[in-house]
Amino acid sequence: MHQAVRKYALVYIAEAILLIVAGLLAMLYPLLSGAAIAVPLGWLLIATAALQGVALFGTRQMPHSSMQLLSIVIALLVGMLLLRNPSQAREVITLLVIVFLMVQGVARLTFGFTIRPFENWLWVVLSGVLGIALSLLLIASLPEPPVWVIALFVGLELIGEGGAMLALAWKVVVPRGAQPAPPSP
Image (cartoon, rainbow, N blue to C red; front, side, top):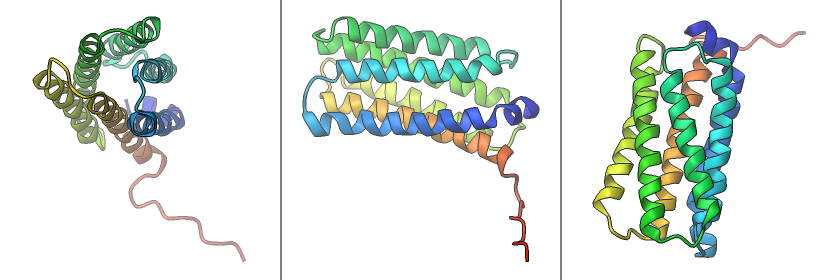
């Protein structure tokens, strides 16, 4: 596991940074425009699925790969459905986002416990708990949560996942106790 993460650490770090940026965009979009969230949210989910697919390709032998693949497929389907009919009722969009958040959360929770002896595994578990908690909060806010709440939750999910991936890969790239090389004379 350590070797697989080390081999693809830079891919994980790039994925993490892009997920964090996508999360920030998801949270900022409704604040900047107040317009419908379906189209940008759809594109963000498709981009997230693509990023996760690239990262999964190199690590498909790892034990979490089937759950991660399911998560990617769900994100891709939800994103495409949102783009297909952006004028859908908010309830449908909310239900799709609930499914996305729950599946992402369960996938990362499973992955986190699978890699448990690995450094920073707890960050992955906590990001999974975040996804599940956000989906449950959306369920509690049914039938019509405000659009900004949906965008905020998707943004938090993407930032949580990006932060967890960054913490996981960063420990491999910059091991504990690593000292920068002294300047040459």
